[in-house]
Amino acid sequence: MAKELSKKTLTKSFHNWYYGNLTCFSQEHMQTFGYLCSMLPIVEELYDKKEDQERSMKTYTAFFNTEPQIGTVVVGITAGLEVARANGSADVDDETINGLRAGLMGPLAGIGDSLIVGTLIPILLGIALGLSTDGSPLGAIFYMIVWNLIAYFGMKFLYFKGYELGGKAVDFLVGPQGLALRESITLLGGMVIGAVAATWVSVKTSFALVGSDGNSILTLQDKFDSVYPGLLTASFVVGCWYLLSKKNMSPIKVMLILVVVAFVGVLVGFFNPGLTY
Image (cartoon, rainbow, N blue to C red; front, side):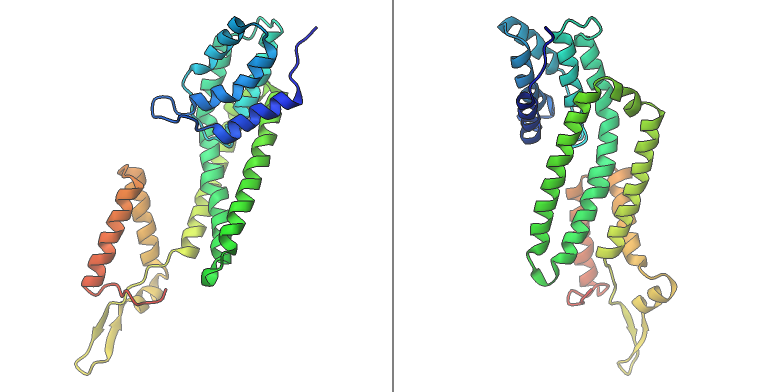
């Protein structure tokens, strides 16, 4: 009789990944232990003997790290492959499973970072910032509720879809279609980040030349606005991107640099700390 997994076991496996994908996270193992936790209910139901369970679990001790939301599909796929192995499939062994995991975690990290981190989260935060006008708590409440709902049900869908598709999902995710998808999402993510920066980041100067009579002869911000509105904002955003992407600086170092620039700018009169943006 062919072995099958119950809906209860699959749901428990998914919940182990959803709540614990960063279990015992370290630079050496990353998400390996979270993966082990998610596969434990699968192995316990499929194998009765402890030695068989131990042999199967050793498969998942290999290094693993990907974007946790989109990467849920890998857990579902390997759950399906484990069922095939438990039923005696000669095509599924340790090398097959670990090869699939290693082959998918990179492409899925690219898709997930662009789609989730670079697109979805900025959109939700942009909406939340709009709802937080005048100190309203609605923005924070909106973000916490909507993000958790999208993350939970989206990850659950991907888990069960991966379990349903099994190895068939690999051809799409690592093939030409997957490459085109990753490039499209990356482009979309860049557009979203640019729109969020243009909407919520505002850098202005208070520098002005004053005549002997005390009246302003030239206001630098007015000149910028007449030639290139938002020039300082764009310069700061591009500068931060350059430091993060090209110089490989950490976000903390970039923020410290911005603090220093703001402090010096106020001292020399280029920025006005009391200016409302």
